[in-house]
Length: 536
Image 1 (tube, rainbow, N blue to C red):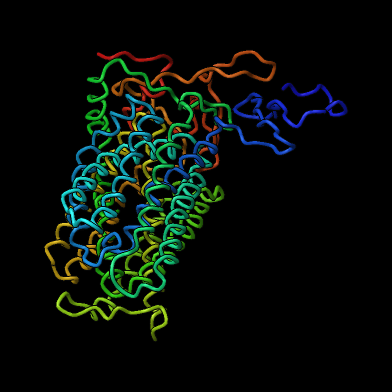
Image 2 (cartoon, rainbow, N blue to C red):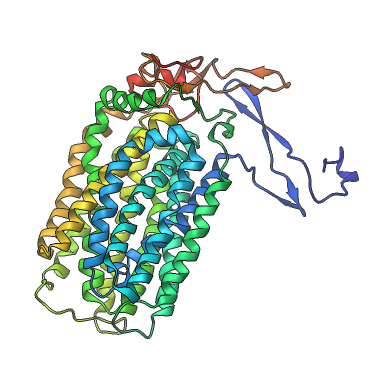
């Protein structure tokens, strides 16, 4: 229904989108408002933050529920061996397909990449329900391998949305929203598990727990189908997300190699990527599953993910704090990460010294003396994990504004992350000493930050764009942003110049493009060119 011309004649609860004006880059951008339904203003469906919220709820229902199950240790089983073996299959396929998931995402688009990715989670939970009754380990391992394939697709597409849809000033907020809602899924899943298993002191979790996970994860797969096309997304400053065009599958594969060749800085982040899921096995299996009773494992799980929500919210707010330059925020973030890694893992030494694979579990309960010290440590592990993931995504988003290139980065991240998880899952399945897994987790986190330090010192700059973003056309397949309507309804191209402010506070005239551009990548020229670039 159309909105009346004046407020006096407003007889409908459903109103058209209303424009608002915003000064931007030397002209006024008319930003539409959402419709009113029964007097309530709805958010714009194609607004970046709306799409980010949808993606966040997909994560809530799929990997969020998976994390709630995995956080019990052994996926809710008494013996973590079958889950470890499934984890090897999961992370192996994740590593292989994660590396090429960016190619698939650029070819299929965000919606269908995520929809394919969402199908594996319910099957994984169903396999453990089956295992409760049949002890069919082969089905569990197959479900893990299939989930690895699916998760590579889902996480790659999610990374592109989170890093390329918002403006530079909203990137930390986007990361915080995504990680907050994603971990809320794990919190609720863990709370349901705790409630269903409160009177279970030992043994595997109930069938009802697995059924609840299956239903929620299936709903998450369906929700993927409601995402908008990325090229239809309009940011708050009027710029559109660049449309990825596909001259051929061959050019997409070549683009994967070109991205690695032309921006070698990303190689310094690979150890961080490797470490980013490595520590989960020690925390979930060798601390939570080993030391605590069934209901206490579920109770711990709630607070582990609550701590992640807090960490994501606080760190996301800091990463968007505009009174500190972007380069300084990145460097301060590095310092915070390095201190917390060593403080938290150093604090875990006390617990480690009480454990050994040959020592029977004390099955510590929520009401046992001294329990809350262990819970406090476990929460800090969760808090640090949220910071690690947020900081990794922020760093990748600060290296390019191209959705195509970000798809490759997200694929690298999840693939290498899966390699690390595969290795430690196998080490745990082979019953390596807890001390080995603890020490390697700590050393990888601290060491990888040191390796990545040059990226924060010299690669990430204060300014949003420089001439180096236009130096060559080696990365093919990104279409120029579309035009938008200006102040008087006339078309205005995005390819005009405007003034931006550098880290020193001095204006710099740069070509206007999407607000996610960053210093340094020579291969970004084609991402921002004036017209589509065909395959060579």
